[in-house]
Length: 386
Image (cartoon, rainbow, N blue to C red; front, side, top):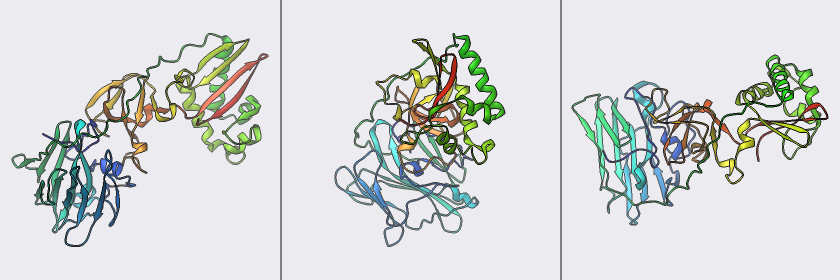
């Protein structure tokens, strides 16, 4: 099988019952996908991801579809004449989509579409990036009721009406090689170390108890007079209270869930000149200064599955433990996947895949910094960002 509907080396997996609805479309086009996949609006143009060339979509006229120029300067066309892109859960409408196709390291290979024709039939269409005329490299598979598109690391298989004997394997010629993606720095950190100072352990236990009970008075008593709640804003307890809306409905404030998550990650303990500093989460304090933390995410756990698709049962590509990954979907448009509990990431060994959101932490997300000075513990900052 020769091509993949995905970014370079991004293994994309779709079950036959799937309804994963080819999520790469919403990422690559930068469209906001809701309950179903989407197609470009009429007249929309944009840059084909991974290239410097533009595409244009038109839904009407004698030649509807996606138009673009290939590397040789020839106009290419994914013809969607006769197609309609429906919505909703019936008739497999939630699978209708247009998406760019990529092949391994070679990059952009063409455009594909899944649409409806007639009353109930569904069609898969593909147009290769290679060719001198608009009609070259066009492939169509139409099912009486449905086409099932199965994506594998090696390519794509299209089955008409779930028939195992009428499978169409679509092949694409080798395209040009685009500029390689920037490398991902190899950052692996140990887990949080046990606190050595008794005072640190006592304070951590007290803080955990206060947060679990949402005891606002005891928590506010821990704040330093000049506590920092946000960069660029006013410091102090009044600003902190306003920032976290503790003066309105303190029990519902996002403060408690934020602190709970930070405490669960563990703290880094540093002792110098008679002072003790505690930083939650621990990996913020250990992050190497030579690596730009704003462009990375941290896998906060052991043996976390990197999967080939945004589903719990998708094949496991590798297991990750407390290491840096580059999150890709935040830089590919305005939207996340249909299931916002998954992120697309790339690892230091150039493997792309899906990882559950609950295992990912932003290195520049919220961190809590506390200091013990002259026998007194005070929270100096609870901030996010650079």
